[in-house]
Structures are given as structure tokens and as C-alpha cells.
Image 1 (cartoon, rainbow, N blue to C red):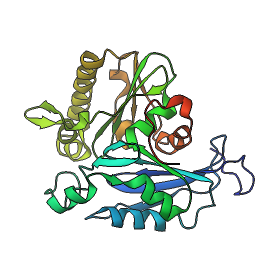
Image 2: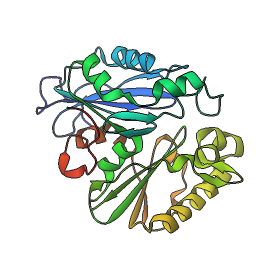
Image 3: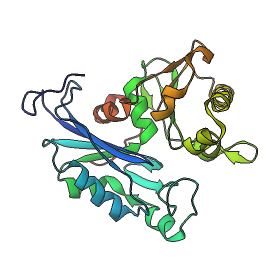
Image 4: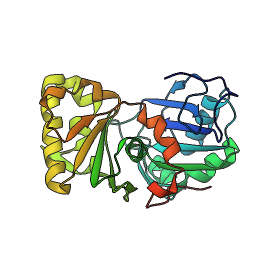
Length: 264
């Protein structure tokens, strides 16, 4: 994608933030979805209580062009911009490490949208990160599901283009007494190799089909490039991981949002 000069794009500008279990990424997009700067990226810090994350995001975006609004995708249960649960950030060092009860308490009902609105100085909307990717890639027809494959396993569901309430399927039991995150997340992929991991992804898709009877499924996230497209049925499409940023604009399009995701 062409990167415009900071003053060339069509307003309003949106600061789009992708909060991941491994890395924090951000960029500023114009109203047409063009980048107006080079992407900023830093490693996700651990331990990562709310105050640390907010400070890290302020540092991440400080040199990016000024935007009129912001959006952020967060890896956890988010409702109206408020974090209800943050599984990765409630651990000592990320997914798979011991859970810290103090971090669980700090993240429970934390109003991240309001905190970022105050810190960044612009109205900010926050939604689950898979939901943000979803609004960027769906066709707007029927029941469409996005799964994101990265540090963990995320899902976003839309019906006729409207974002449905988020479901933390990642933390439901998938196989052998373990949840989707543990069985399909990046740690599992590294342990078992891409071939066996691909078979688990296919099984997960079959489970989603039984659960939702989706019309189409999209695969995003950093590990989507490791999925063998020749194994996928016709109603499953691999999409670019850039959707995690591009969806930030769609988060401000209330025509696509049945459940309002944040402040502003």
C-alpha cells in the first residue's frame, strides 16, 4: 500500500492500534484507508497491568501524525470499551505462564477506552482484536466468522455486516482437556510443527461450522500465512493480517456495529 505524506490524506485521520500478546502495533490511516506514516511497533511488555499497557501505547504512538480519533483492538473480552477479562495480560509473562491474581483483579472491568481517550487526547473506541479484524474483511452478507491465529486463537462474528456480541471461544475446551488457545496458539504450533498444527486448525473450523453454521469463514492473524490453503474448503478464505489495523476505521462506522464498542 502507498504511504501518503502526513498532510495529503483525506480527513478524518484515525489512529489504529493493534494490541497483541507478543507485539503492539499502530499506524494512522486517512478516511480512505491509506497509511499516512510508517507503522510503529514495539514488543508487548510483561507483566502488563493496565497502567503499563496505556503508558506503552502512549510511547508507541508519540511520533505518529496527529489523528482526530483512535481505535484499538484488545486480546480479551471487551464490552462498551471496558475490558472484562484479559487472559494473556493477567499472567506473569504471557499465554502459558502462571496467572497473577492481582493482574486479574486490575484488568477486570477496566475502562480501557476512557483511559486511552484521556491519555491520547482523542476519542477512542476499543473492541476485541478479532472483532476489529472481522469488520475489515467481511462481505456484509449472512453469518460471517473470522478466526485469528497468532499468540492465541481469536474469533469475531458478524451477521449481515453487524458485529455480534463477542464470545471468548478461545477459552472453551477444544480437545484433550485444553482450550483453543493452548491447542492452536503459537506455542502449540512451535511444539508440534506446522503439519500437525494445520490439522488442528481444520478440526477447529469443523467445530465452528457445527456451532454456528457460518456462511463464510475468514482466517487472519500472524500465523494465517502458515495455513495450507490447499486444505481449505471453498467457504474459507485467508485474509491479510493488516486487517488488524484497517478495521480500526470500520470501528467508527456505526452502521456495522450492533454492539457499541467504546467511548467517543
